[in-house]
Length: 427
Length: 157
Image (cartoon, chains in turn green, red):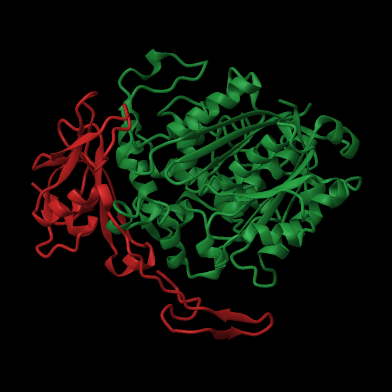
């Protein structure tokens, strides 16, 4: 396998509805953004693309990725669509990596988009719920927020996690987004704001849950030689992992924890795993990616994380899957301030601010979640962090993580059915 | 909570919704001819007021849902009746949802654990103001079966 480098990225502003641009034009905007960043790259030098969008229902257009590929002027080069629920973008990133690592392409474009404003919110909830078992789960009252709420209820029961700790995640991500002009829902919040907003599924309120969005993102990956020629500060992809779990949450086992290198069996003597409180697909993805990148102690060896916080609760669950803290300690991890950025006033008393910033961009909660674009959006923000160019692209330096050398991106589908973890590093 | 931001769902045909840019409303409706196939005995049993799970002979794993082949070892499973009562493993009360279920909100979803079974069962809970993990529950079946997973819910024992 060859080394693979990210040489550019581009995004559109994520918003509730973008009726001025259809999905092709949104991707074109992100694509042109990416091309502007690497002026030496002409379309002629691109070998092909991988496209990602989650739902044909939202798009009301089958084979929409073909339409984007031709709109970008990439015919007759190879292309394919990747679909995997919420992890669509992360899977697309990894598929583009595979194209370059295998030697099949030297320069590959990964593009993703979603146009969720095309239906009412409750119809959108129904489409998303169709990504749960339609024989057994959907007819009972299919609603993803309900599934996540049940998972966090069990997390609270097992570990003592509190709704206030969930609110800390929401406060952090919405506040970070105030410094990111591409975000959809920047806000300065208090615990009371989060807890007193409309209850959606106990204990999750409207501000614990990401919104539906329109948006697009583009990532360009290249082999070493092309990366050196085309880009003055390429970022290396040093680790990849992917994991899965059963579609029906009910079918998950209650067995032994999958251990990371820095953990011991004794750490989890009485824990039945993953049950519905944890995502073993995320743990499995992290384990592979850490092994490939040579990471032993993720909390010390990573400089920042962009993870799939579709829910404030799933951010806490994911800290644990990624081994940033032990299983059960996710609530405390956020409450003590570890994942907050230094230099921002969150209106909270925090002890360990800036240890390992998580979702400095604002994450899904505040940037928005145009599904097919989301996993690629994370790669774009991570790329800018490692390049040290947050100020150039966001217009201010507030979210720039000091000496960001190595970052992790994490994309997540269903109730944890597909999960990807990728590691990006300064070469 | 749901706010009306778009035209109603069920008006037929293509309708001009707004200008500049021109936005159209398209109606779309489907009837699926959907087979439960190998899971059919589960739905037939629901109509008789029985709840079936799957048991694997070779490895002994027992599922509280239909799985014609075992996730652990790949062997064919046998149908087995679930116990007449279980315990709430986790729960939530939904105040919002997909369009099809909006009119039923608020409703309470639960995952039920059964003694002697390795996995859980998703259903709704009705009949008590307070719901908690560990609460003993039993299934209650719809009198006129619709052959859907919503033909049963759980009530306190």
